[in-house]
Length: 84
Image 1 (cartoon, rainbow, N blue to C red):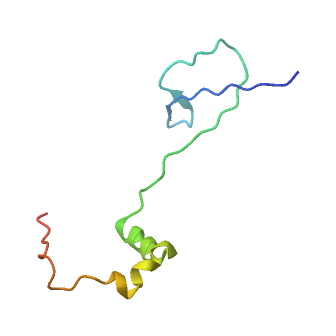
Image 2 (image 1 turned 60 degrees about the vertical axis):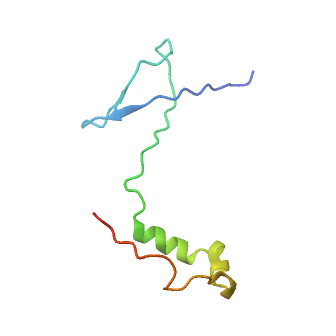
């Protein structure tokens, strides 16, 4: 007979003692052995400088370097001044 696995998604916190504390009880009658996969959030979001570097070096945007795409001049539009 084939071993069929069931997945249950749950959220929780890893405490100071490195123990996993779930937010809600699991819908499982135990005791029973389980396998656990822990997905950690990204440490930091990509900053604007890294985002611009990635976009400027991505070949998907190479078409913007073509002269036909250069349709604006410095006289077009109005200046934007950040009010922060």
